[in-house]
Length: 169
Figure 1: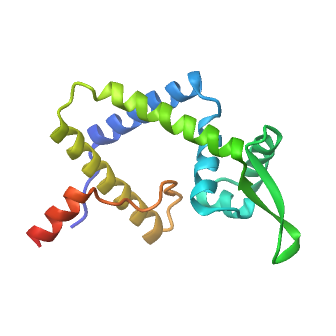
Figure 2: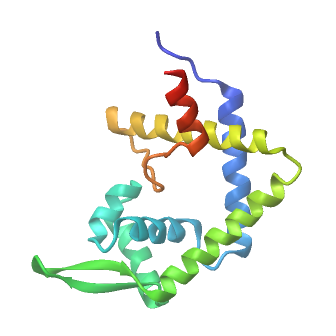
């Protein structure tokens, strides 16, 4: 049975991403696309810019320009690829790690403020459902060669959720 899209869910997600993006643009030290490249580089370690482009679903020239801007600002560095002397690897610098941590703290603070009047069980339910949605979107991207990519990687259930799954299975 094929599920039908829920327009209300899509509308809420779009609005949420828009609000997060606007909050990021107003105050952040890096743009949202730059943050995505820094986070992916931190997760994967040094790699080729073409692999970054593929992972985020952007063309190589756009990614190359963004990488160059991050290199110019000292957040990324290029080093020779030991396996291919003609190629370069892109990796985080100490300044890149710091700006990434700063941006993550800022995002966490924004979400913490938004959820400060939610009780713990509602926050846990939200985290569980968002993790489930991320896993489903990653599966769709993988199984249907869809351009959706997961920067954060596979969702890992919270320990309590994993315990519930073990006890109910």
